[in-house]
Length: 507
Image (cartoon, rainbow, N blue to C red; front, side, top):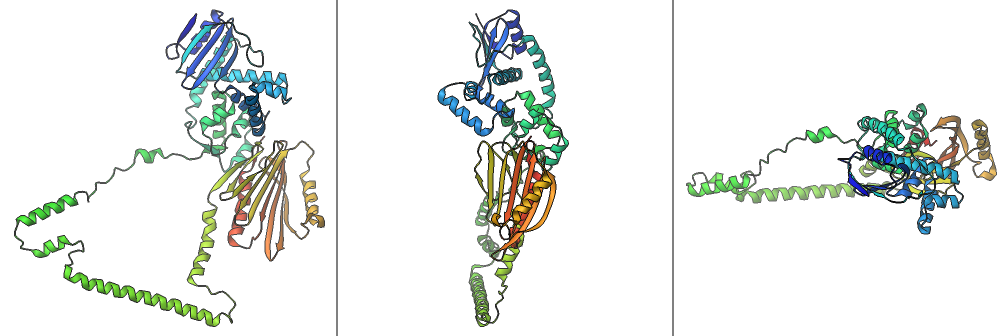
């Protein structure tokens, strides 16, 4: 027996209830565009469910729950494809997770698939009775009526939440006060997992998909993050300007050819009592007759030649003056050109530092912003994140982060680091400690040391941060090779300020 129809005329809850009451055993296939969900029933009880990109969804769920990082996920998905095996089996065979842990996550994945399915209002379904053996890597069973009740509750709450968040094509980013807002808000594990997907490039739809959670859970987490002021929309579209756009002004020149033609026809029919009027119409030079054009051309040419000669004489005088005094005056002559260059050097940092670019490591250990304009080098491994950002203006930022579970005393570690600077074998013995302090930043406790030294008559400075938080340790080193230069010093200060405002160590 085959039962088929569409969700517009046959509600999904009614369909599930019918299959449960009749104790049906078989396979229910529901499709909408490119999405396909298959639900398996055994004696009216749901025992399994799969969806499009099922293996990838399981991987996203494991990543959100902190079981795997991005690097491990890519690695084991590739192994599963090459072996033509399920991702769960590969993870168990590689001793990455236990069979019991896998059972828990597969059950969560099936729940997410089923709950997301109840948000569908359009689609086609087909149920076929057939023998069902338990599919997947674990044995699961779901009471159909309990599932329907919980799904109905989520649908009702979902209808309220979708009105309070932006459209799904909007891109989200961290707010400038994300670090302080995050400290003031107690986030759940699921909210932290969704937060880690916000990078200023993913849309809301992509975040929901890559979270591995059902749509209700992901949207609820985004709503919490938005209302807490941790994230916001990257680019807000000005709908008012679009809807109230001014109407294009009529082109007053559009009828000039027609008016000119009418005037010419009228002139041909009437006697030429006023020849000056016709001469002015024939020439676009405000009525200047042709016989006077030659005089004005000669006058303009003479003025151009005179201006060129004056500029050449001025440049010659400057060169002669510089040649006479080059040996006696060692200070540079500030010409108009050099003055313009200095003004550009003063104005350039303001333009150079107005935009920021986000950095999020592949292991999801941290997030921060940097002034735009750097080259990026990432040598991250599964156990340690290593990122280097280099600016052309002799400023470099080195970031290292890894998991940490040992004892930590920020003050003791700070003085150990200072002592290391004074050790001749460290290569930093010439550096003078400008300042040192205990700090609480980005969700971690640690210290900041600022050192300075002179190398080849150039002032070199370093800000060194060491922070521990959320079982991670992160070091940030900001180095400036020639801080006396205006542009370099301004960039060095801006980089330090931007990191202090934006750093966030992920829970």
